Image (cartoon, helix red, strand yellow):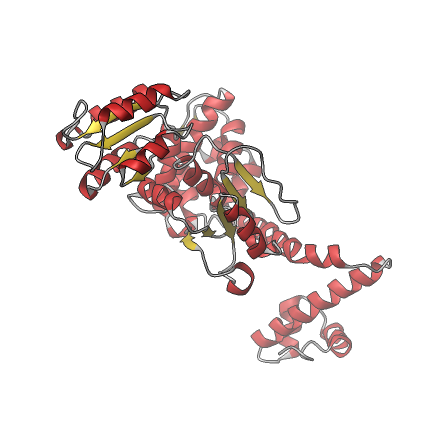
Length: 396
C-alpha cells in the first residue's frame, strides 16, 4: 500500500511495483493509510513522510499490534527515508522482503501479450481501482476471464474470485468481499439486480460478453474494456506460442523443441478464429504429439497439422458456427414446454431454413436458380421449400 499526495512519487512507485507483479493500493491521507494498514492482506505500507499528520511512531506501533504484522517504510523525510532516487531495484527488493508478488513472471509476460498496449500492467491495476463495475468485451477465446483474474490479483489477490455462469445461482462466499465475475453477460437475466446486490455487499463486479453493451439489460454504470482478436495482432503469435511451449514443457515434462520457419509461416498465416484458446490448444497438441527435436510440419501428425490448412480452417469455422448456434438455441430449448419433441425440431429447422433462404436469395438478387446452385439444392426442391416456408413473410 502507498500513501502519498505526490502524484509523481505515486506514479513512480506504483508503476515500479506493479511491473514487478505486486498488488498496489493507494490513498492520500494518513487516516486512510491507518485504515488500510489494518486490512489483513496489507504486507507493506509505503508512506510519504511529507504527508500531513503522518506520525511514524504511531504507524510502527499500530503495525506491531496487528496479527498480520505489516511492515512500514517511509518515502520522504521521516522514518528511515527512501527517496525518489532510490525508487527502482531498492524498492522492489524492499517489497520482496515483506510480500510475495501477486503475479508471476509468466503472468506478467502474458498480460503484455493481450493486446492492451505497452503499459498493460498499469492499465490492469487502474481498472482494479475503479469504483465502477468492469465490462470486458471480446470475441470467443480472447481471454476475457484471464484478464478479469489479472485485474483481481493486482488489486485484491488474497480475496475470493467468484465465477457465476448463466443459469447458475448466485451465492456469495463467507469472509471479506472479493471479485464477482459474470461470464457471458448477454446470457444472464436480472443483471442490474445482481449488480446492485454485489456492490451493496462490497464486491467488485467484472462481466464479459462477446456482444456490444446493452444498456437496457445491463445498466449504464460500467467501465468498458475491449480485447482485440488475435488476427489483428499477428506480432503476438510468436511470443504467445513460446510462452505456451514453456508453460506446458514445465507442466508435462516435455523436451525443449525449436519451432521451424515453415511452421512459423503456417502459424502466422492462420486467422485463429478461436483466438488465444485455439492457439493454446494447438500448441499443446503439437508439443505432446511431435516427433523429433523440432516442431515442424513433417514432425506433426496430420490431424494436428490440418488445423492450420484451409480445410482445417473450414472445419474449425464449422465448429465455431455450431457453438454460436448452440448458444442461441439454448434458451429456446430450455423454455420449450411442449412434450412433443418433433414440434421443437420442426420449429428450429424451419426457422433456420427461412433465414438461410433469405440470405441466399438476397445474395443472388432473387434468382432462384442461382440460389439453388449456391445451396446445393435442385431448383424444384428449393421452389417447393419456398412455397411452404415463405421466407420473406414478416422478415422485417
